[in-house]
Image (cartoon, rainbow, N blue to C red; front, side, top):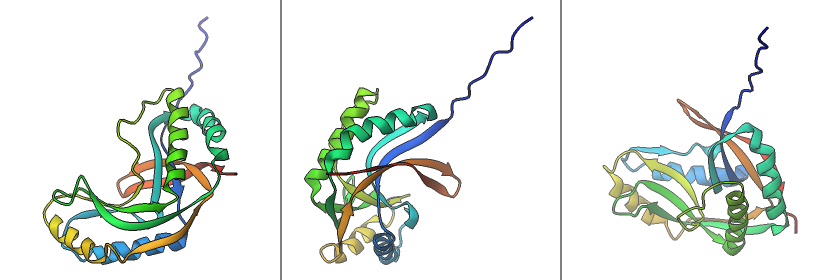
Length: 199
């Protein structure tokens, strides 16, 4: 008699580590998006509930590794301590001449943010992830241009408030492991694990 083989189903999760923001800060960012929307350009704006600061994108990961990842990051990140950030300045990737992504800059205790990213990066490399080829540039993505047509008008609109718009008083006291589920209406994010940044 043949015994039935037990089938173990491994689910793939699209994961990233992030700093989530308060509702008040998301409201300020949404108001900024509303101002920029008046420019006649085709932009896929990030939904208000999805606005965040990315620390590390992991890609598709077996769900069985969530615990391992969380424990490893907790060991290196928990002792970083909380730090303060400010959102200020608007910019474009790859640049204002051919804008594809519009973003808000990050200021404040950015050295601590870079330290946190470096520790997360190192421990994930030890778990098999590739080292990022680009240096860490803290920013918050507001939207992605679907076409370059009208891009110069969006750049001009952003320039009008570039030096005036800012949000301060952001305290980063924890980081979250996020699951991103891609849907026809856009990505849906869910917090899987949280790590407190105790001193």
